[in-house]
Image: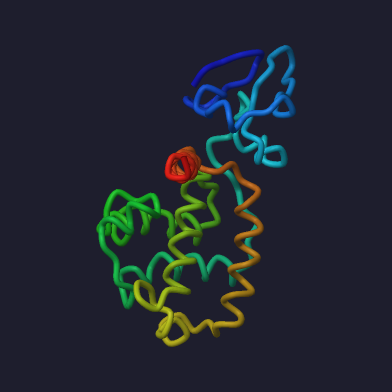
Length: 192
């Protein structure tokens, strides 16, 4: 993290990570006494790139009982009908499929059930695991979802949208931001 003017910036989240073509004069914002440049398309998402000094380590989430059950099932089904492998688990933020099913996935499910605050990373991992296991026929439990969870598809989608809305208010995990930026940079390199 680098510091400037009372703000902390995640490593690599300042203008040096972006090419000159991605920056324009309109992309400069004043934070206290510090001027910071951001890519053109992030004007409305600027807060996602800047982490305030006293950002909490864990976040409480006001979820209904059904929303909690949905996330818990979304994590637990990776040990059931969902077909998981290490590279997919890694994309969701877990170390391995074993970690998703037996270690961090179980810990996150237990924390959700106990209504405990969790790190933003954990909320995003629970959401991503649920999104994939609910919707993917090839990798998830899509065809078996209603049978193994007791949630009808329409109700699951309604709950999933509600949870997505709530989780989207949390700061995005640094690994997710780095992956998005790297993907955009690869696309930009291919276009040249």
